[in-house]
Image (tube, rainbow, N blue to C red):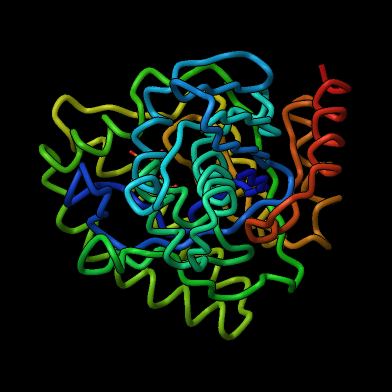
Length: 334
Ligand code: 2P0
């Protein structure tokens, strides 16, 4: 009863910001993301009848199972002979990237449990389980452009693969600050839903953005894709400025990065930005323009603050040999 899976992280182009059901992780609006190749989590799950409790090792270090055990329970409810599990995870999302890893973490965990349990859930059903660990994990079950349809209930609030994004799409992450954020996205979105007078307008506008971005993807229209991405991300941050008390994730260097992207566009380079619950700036661009964009950004940021990612694949299962290799490459990065 062993399962091993890899899932990549994702960056939302149409953001998820607000829950209509906190327990079931049902979102207020549907969202859409790009799965990234550069950042992923490998997870091995072993159900073992000799264990007397769950255990969890993250990057070879034992951690609390307070988030893992309730997640395992969702699957154990369906298993004919539920057992405790040993969970081992290797996070290839460098702390230096300043990116949250909960999306790849819960998508990989869902995959590994699925294989170890023998439940053989299909990928869409699995995405509804990943959602219960962290909303953004819903989208990390698939590669390329992925929609998280908000659905009407817990069974159909799920991921839908939209396009494999194999048309010159890439992302550059500008690392402004890698420190842990002071307001978690979970708390930030809850405060926004409760207090921001802009929130209802956000929900309505995000649904329109989603329809428009899906059309742009269908047309492989990079400019429209980028314009909607930037418009949607900025609106999400606008709802936070209208919260009570107001809050903002931008830092001075966030603004410098934003100005650099606008400057690139003024020079005719198509590059568009999006920011999440933190100060880092993610630049949606075309693979072919990466050298030009980098040479401009390197005048403002050191090279180690600029991380390039191509498009990532769907969650997939790994062999024991793959796992040994992951352990080795993790050791090598230390
Ligand atoms: C997103 N974010 O769509 C949005 C945009 C951050 C800003 O999903 O409470 O860690 O675990 O469901 O998924 C980050 O929030 O929150 C997030 P929970 P999650 O990517």
